[in-house]
Amino acid sequence: MNDSRHAVDIRVPDDQRYQLVYQATFTLADISPEDLEVPFVKISSALGTLRHLPLLKKTFGWGGTLKILLKTLTGKRHLYGSPQSGRMVHHGWLSLGFCRHYHVHQDDIVIGSIWTDPAARGQRLATRAISQAMREGLRDRAHRTFHIDTASDNFPCQKVISHLGFGAPVALYLRGRKRSTSNQG
Ligand SMILES: CC(C)(COP(=O)(O)OP(=O)(O)OC[C@H]1O[C@@H](n2cnc3c(N)ncnc32)[C@H](O)[C@@H]1OP(=O)(O)O)[C@@H](O)C(=O)NCCC(=O)NCCS
Image (cartoon, rainbow, N blue to C red; front, side, top):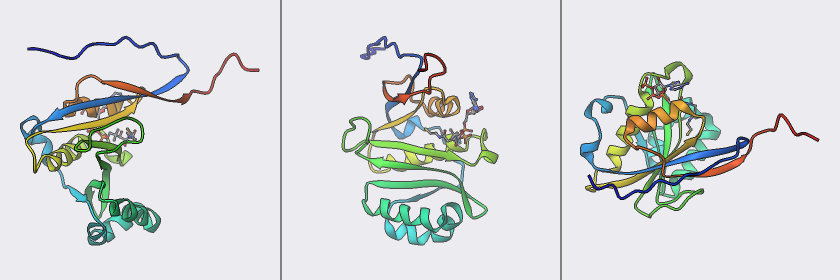
């Protein structure tokens, strides 16, 4: 196999917090069918927000629902989630063609702010719901590039990213320094 990537050795200071950035191009065939069996909703517009109002209100309250309405109005931000008993037990955002932290192509999707209810963690909910979201993103095209990033010490999220098939991180960005326990004063 011709691997056109090259490795870069980066040394990050111990007290520096950083995010690992993952990027990969997927086709529908890359998404495992058994990862798709989970209740799923995607909210891409103000109309969708109104249609799912009870679900959103129960999950995010009125303030959160209003924020979602404003975000979906841009047309570039889609909320996805997995509903159970009238509320979302997993949710996250799909941003089309933009990221505040690194450059992405206008056709790319950035997966972000993923969250699973603590009582439902470890049941592959995140893996399955994100797989469904990625499948939605591939509905109208043969392949698409997705991005996702997480903290260097967020091992559950790194596991999800690995299950999704992203491979090794392609970059990192810095998030400010950890509170120092030595050298104070
Ligand atoms: C990250 C998060 C969304 C994962 O949700 P989830 O529904 O539990 O994810 P999944 O069940 O699909 O996968 C989690 C994997 O991490 C593993 N895991 C859990 N805790 C772990 C730990 N401390 N170290 C390593 N792996 C761990 C689980 O065993 C599972 O892997 P497995 O399926 O191979 O057993 C959830 O932990 C969460 O909401 N965290 C708080 C918010 C957050 O950190 N969001 C990410 C911001 S980028």
